[in-house]
Every structure is written in structure tokens, then in C-alpha cells.
Image (cartoon, rainbow, N blue to C red; front, side):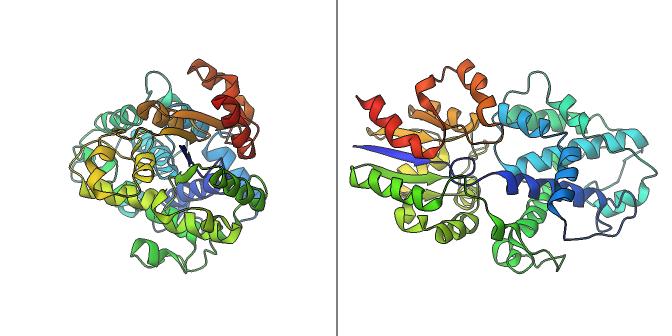
Amino acid sequence: MATILFDVDGVFLSEERCFDVSTLTVEELLYNPRYLNLDGRKFKAIYTDEEIADIRNTIFVNDKILQSFKEAGLNSNWDMLFITFSVIYLDILEQEKLNLHGVNLNDLNQVGDMLGDVTVRPEKVLDFLKGTLNSKEDIYQALIDKAGELEGFSDQGSFQLYGALWSLGHYKYQEWYLGSDLVEADTGKAAEELDKTGFIHDEEWIVDPQLIVDMLEKLKEAGYTIGVATGRPRQETLLPFEQGGLDECFDQRRISTASEVMASQEKSEVDHALTKPHPFSYLWSLYMHNDTLFEEAVHGKNVSDEQIYIVGDSVADFYCAKAIGATFLCPLTGLTGEDIKDTFYELGVKESHLMENVLDVPLAIKELEH
């Protein structure tokens, strides 16, 4: 029989809250008195949905920045918020024309004290993403190159993947998403802000989770093996799964998350990122976390002779499927909905592989197999 591997955000769960959290993280790094403190405003941890929408429209330029990331195959909210903040940060430093010799750019509070009145220009992120930035590696290298243009600045490691600023963005995202009470268990670092309630308690399912459970159980009864590969950390995957009843559908060894990816990144000796669009997470679920196949997963090698389906909403998921010879199926329930169709057509995805939502997966597979 075959194995069906599902992405989570944009397939089972809406990405909207993740994007909201990315928005608030960038906003906090820019304006919290602990960090750049650009206009001296008092930090607050509670926002209305309307306030979040306004901030998001500003930070992500009516979601155009998010769309550009998605089209480039950059799928991680941690990466998207970091690149967005970094480009805005570098633009601010360029505006001020500071001599940065001996300045630690990782110390946002110190740098903030050096700044005068500056203009926050998120549209510079769109300018940065235009052109030939067609992969995660391209984007990060371009960011490092851009940082190297600053006068007196030599520590380009500040803007590397998993560097100090990236890790700060990751921590603040987790603090917003999990809330002040849960962030320490996840990151090992106590909450800085004590009033964050956590967006994990406000997840939005794309369709009724019971309908998803029924579909998954029918697939298993028909002989299919099912698994998950997601950019979410494990805790943020399992908690909504438990709330929605999906946890009983999956073998835990068939669930690969950002937690496993980050641990594997540290364990491996490769110099490339294992996050999507690298297929590691899909292969790790396919291989049931089998350590004897770790190197194969790290190097993107599919040594299985099974028919594999990957169900995802993004270009990054498409590239994962292509890399391991899997069949790609796409529910049109991600950030841009049906507007992403043309992008997939250009990549060679057939109409029969696109569907209204994840509940259409069984029918799509049935038609493909007959």
C-alpha cells in the first residue's frame, strides 16, 4: 500500500494565528523597551484582533511579504519573522549611518540607545525579496551580504540562521505563541513578559477536526499508512491534536516536527538546513525515526520502495515531494487560498492534484490510483 504524509498548517490548522504571532514578534523587537525601543511606547501583551490585523497589515505589507516568502519556498514562521525584522533593522542602521565598529548588533537595547528618529520601512523587505532569491539559502546569503555593506560592521554571523538574533526571534515567538506560563518548558528560558496568554489556546481548524479524524481512520482502514511532517515544534503540534482528537490517529514515530528537525540539525554534520524545503521531516516520518536511516534522511535520500503522497499547501511542500519522488497533493487552504494555483501550475502541478480542502484527499488518491 502507500504512505500519506500530511503537513499541518494550511492543511489541518489555519496559519492565521502563526502569522499573527510572527507579526507581534517583529513588533516587539522593534518597539519593546527591552529591545530597539524605537518610539518609547509602553509594551503591552494583550491586543484585540483588530489591533493585530492593523499591525500585521503594516509589518507584512498586507501579507505581501508573507506571500513572497511562500513563493520562494520559505515556510518557517521563525525564518519569516527573522528575515523581516533583520531587513527592517538593517535599513534603520543604514538610515542612521552609524559607524558600527565594536558595536554588538545582537544587543538590540544598546543599539536602540544609539538611534535617533527613524522610519520603519517594511516595504524594504519586499524590495529585498525581489529578483533572484529563489531559495532559503539564497535569502540567507543575501541577508548576510546586505549586512556586510554596513560601515564598520564585520560580524556577519549576527544574521545567520540559528545565530543570536535568530534565536532571540525564536524565543519571543514561542513566548507569544505558548504564553508566559508554558514558554520555559519549551525553550528552557523563563518568560520575560508575564502577561502573554498564548495563542496556542486559540487555534483555528480549517475544517471540523472530527471530520478530519473520520477521514484519517478510513484511510488507515483502507490500508494506508499516515504520518505528519510539520514546521511546528512538537508541543505545538500535539496539544491541538489532542484537543481535536487527531493524536490517536497517528503513530508517534510518524510525527516529525521542528523539535526533531532542530535536534537533528545539531546532531548532524551537514552545513545545509534540514527545515523545509529540505525533505528531512517527511523522510523522518517515513522512516519512523529509525536512527539507522538518519544519514539517508539528512541527505534527502528516499530508500523506500513505497508509493508516497505528500499533502501540503506550500511551495516548500512541493519541493519536498519532488526531492523524494513523492506525489504532491495540495489543499487550497493556505495563506493565499486559490490564488496560489498559478504558482503551482508553473511548477507543473496538475489540476487533479489541487483540492478544496484536506477532506478531498481520499477521492484524489482514488482517482490517481485508478
